[in-house]
Amino acid sequence: MKKIEAIIRTHKLDDVKSALVEAGIEGMTVVEVRGFGRQKGHTEMYRGTEYAVDFVPKAKLEIIISDDKLQSAIDAVLKSAQTGNVGDGKIFVSDIAQSIRIRTGEIGDDAI
View (cartoon, rainbow, N blue to C red):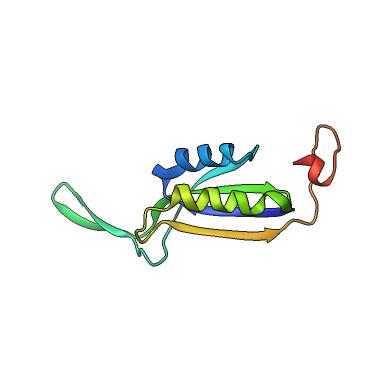
């Protein structure tokens, strides 16, 4: 099992969700986050005063997936989240030692 963490632009969330559902991915967790990377934030005007916004709003998707569906999930996120501009986000993949469904006690791939 793998865990995919994808940090994406908030306005691309619906596109990414649709692409993942199309790819057969059954579940995900989404968290609203703030951060910066190479984008380094931006400036905004408020009542005539310019100020810096250091932390840019993003969406973080967490998906636990079986190894055989990993590449299709990555491809779905890449294709649907990419705009070609700085700030498109990142995808991180890590190993999951075990998963357990609380309701039934199922373990491993059966639990996801």
